[in-house]
Image 1: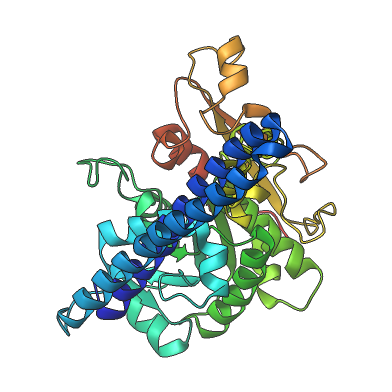
Image 2: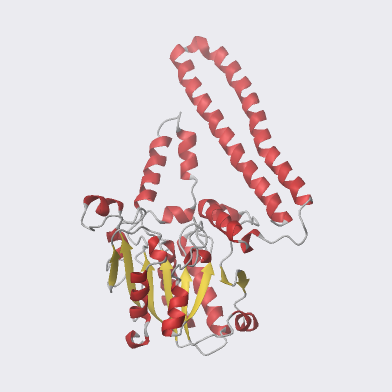
Length: 396
């Protein structure tokens, strides 16, 4: 970790622990307040004394919880090596940053926190500037057809080649490598802050693709976008933006593939929203409901699969074909558990989408599979080859 990342981590840990201490204080006061109110006016003097002592005690604890990690981080930052790698450029550090940004990336961005993940192209474990010289260096074998890969919530470009839980897996199927070998396309990987609103990431993706097209080493004939989970929604958001403005890359897009994308919303986020509302309805649990409600804007967008700022019906430009892939954990997609649980995070009906979200095109379904199986599966690879192959490229 670099010195500024260590200091920022200490500060962030302090804020988190301080918030936890404040929640405990508010819970304590809510419970004691109910007891004192039940005792009537005679208990008011005792309550005031109790509250004053509690505020002083909890204030000291919260201050300690905030300042101790911050001081430790600042001290460790002074001892950091000058040549230490950035968290963003190590596998473990990148996954930690991705998880952190999924939870609070919108706030990190507003606060200009150095731990906020910017949207960027990634190649060889490093960021790539979308300008001619950098692109030519990063993609020496660039072809005229690109496949842009977008990860999902809490992920980064490494999810396409590594199992986030088991790291490197021998023989793991990497879609980008398969498509490069079978079709001759160039895979391009994007990393982005999944805690931001999907519509914000859609705008940034639209801009990034403008620069990518302008600086690509050879003349481009086609761009394909493959998005996993939230990545599919970001792709649709970028298409919506491009359809309303002057974005030259749009004329090159013919195919979009969404793998387990919650076009109709995600049940877990709907459950989190309900839990937050229930907890906030009672004073004793309100602080914890507020903590639940503090989840990132990106996560909240998954409740309905929202891809625009105003939740209007998104526009998929004419000539763009959107294919979808879903999965369920049961061997039979019609099993009650399979219909309810889906791939653990997304149900089949949501992943399939409808004419309300995008024109219905080909759909692939995997039984006995989960949300992360979609990142590396031979049936998905075969579908990608079929959908992206030259013989199936539709005219614009």
